[in-house]
View (cartoon, rainbow, N blue to C red):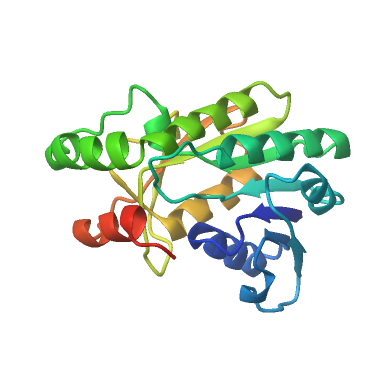
Length: 230
């Protein structure tokens, strides 16, 4: 399958690109920074800003599916990247007749997501990181979900919990709408997207993804995901 990966040189996009190539897919890696992606068999690099309709249209042409792993850093100002890119991507897909879309969102987008037994999360992480530092980011993620919901594409909204780095894929868990857990390794997020691309268990709905066998260092997670600049 020939797939377009948006955000291909981002933290999740790198896992997604590597795993897709390893399993035999052809990948069109869509990025604003092509120099960070080494040439490999099966890889085509498309230079594009994901919010630029013309550039997005050119990148999507000739693909069979689109996987978006776009991400933004927390900031106080209004964020529009998620919703603007979703608009450009879904319109380009409609023009080219590409039906399958998987887009990374967040468990926070589910208003009923309350992981069980997560006292520290409910009383510290959620109010500090998600509701304060990440407020504008999550608002735009919800706008992105609305844009995608309104299309007639075969979409899946992929909702991880707190993202962290782990070198290998684990025995991750998926569930409809959101999954009952606090953390998701990026390697697991990428693997779940590629599996869903083949299995199509969550078409036109959301898929929660959590990692259950390893946990991140909390202080490092907050610093890496919410504070440190690339």
